[in-house]
Length: 345
Image (cartoon, rainbow, N blue to C red):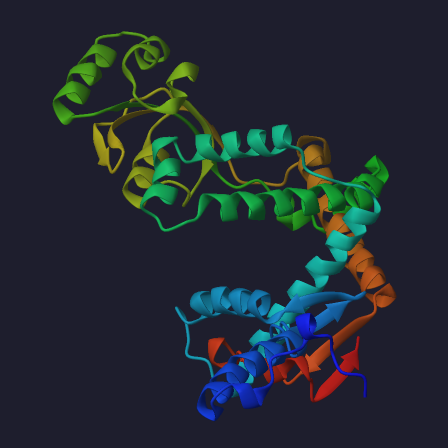
């Protein structure tokens, strides 16, 4: 063997004391092993695949925990009930997955303006301050909630385009449906009511005296009522029995048309009611309930069409499920990525 030139000759072990030589070799071997055997992160456990896209363990367990929190308020779950719940949760995740895939195929998306408009609607329903409190003290993560809302709007838009837009209800269909379900459209006894709401009894009694003295109910309601219907002169529209609180229900249904009630208390304040009109129970004409019949028949047809549309998407999808299904956080086992059973739906 040709010897190394002196200037590049390697350091040989015999020139170093044996103990020191071993100390040098140990870290060199360790570094070499680290380079040759890089540790890879464990695979993410997969519960199911839909057209090649995964539903991972964390996604499934989060959805399952949400449903369990709802169900456990009413009943304790046995093993069979738990298995049915897990299957239902998985079915829902699978359905959402292929619906989102369909939305992507159609290039559907929810823009920031559309999302902001929906959030404003919800904020108004929650009366602004209460809406903010949901995120400040209610334990709800706003970015996560916002993302969930975006997904919900996307699915609503998808269904509107793929299903609802194709539904039509003709007058002939509506009339036939009305005659087949005539009892459902029979008029019930109703009363037409207006109200004035005040924050305390003393103020309410003073206003009642003004009304009994002849002041116009509509005018006074617009001036003093704190109820949202004050802009309509206190007009609440028509009510059937059982809609209003029981004590108020008895009061307004016993009022003759045009008469005033006494001051009545509720959690919203102190009320003065006036009966504006009545409708007696009886059969309604098709012309009187036409719009209601069309709306209800359309809703029924949309539900039927939606089921057919979902079944069609599901039949076309390649769905693989890794069994057994996990049962909660305790089942977070890396072995889940190696399923005992793989099935296609």
